[in-house]
Image 1 (cartoon, rainbow, N blue to C red):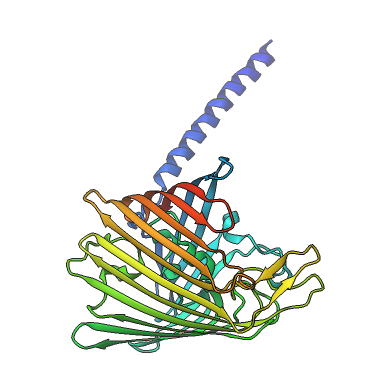
Image 2: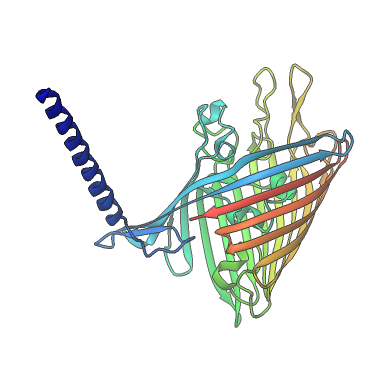
Length: 410
């Protein structure tokens, strides 16, 4: 009996000691929390004690609801998904003139499409991996994988859009990311004007390709002119006039891209144009973009024109009778919005697509009309966006599309 009492006493004592140690460790853990001076939306920033490097880490995600009504069949389909989830690292190494950017896509939509030999049948996680050297005040050289200097809407981050997502012009014709070298130069013109020149030489087949170059190289040239000087906080490359420019600001851009012996439908994007026997097709794809961005006192307008042509009218035919065609034709996108007090915005968008040759083009005749609403809680870092679209498609069912999205960016 005495033995049993001793065991019970020791058990109670052990539990008390364990509880005390747990509470002590919990208190120590709370006391040891790191309180950062970084602000929401600005990422976590560190710098070496010897100032030999810096790194800013940021993460963001978009949760999306998408609903579509087929106007011919009256069928409604919808889904929830994580549209994007990203990890980003940037800073400088050795010298502030040598900067870098690494961006990883970790949602299924971000890294899908890797089930082909050309990317090693693996997920395409890497979006950007580029080093930039600011050689002089006006000249910089980039080396690695990143966005090409193409249409404005594509270069604008998906975090900083005026609508839930980019336009049909961008999704069908843009030249996206590629790996290679870019050279950039900027200089002043007149009292306020700024002229920016960009040149890129890249592999031409898009991001995360590990196989030898199937076709030729891709050459991209872009000019930008800002007649009234630079926007606040690089506002020519984020949508909506969140800075409420105090005077009219305008940026005009023109891009020419030629993808020699392009092996994929859209150059850097789409399927490789292969028939069922494995024969690779190739053609020169030429793309022209003209775009502008205007902002003043909460009002913003952005417009783009795109045109993609091929040097040959060809397509691949598969055993089942289907075809793989190059996406060629032209498109126009116009959008405008006004930012009200309280940082709520209403915006309108019109997009039109036209194939250049119905027989050989993979582009479809489409028109889209969109009404959008955005509530910017902390700029583009924390916002709620919703839009409603009518999609008019030749040769296919017309649709009504509703989207609702929340963006969170640390």
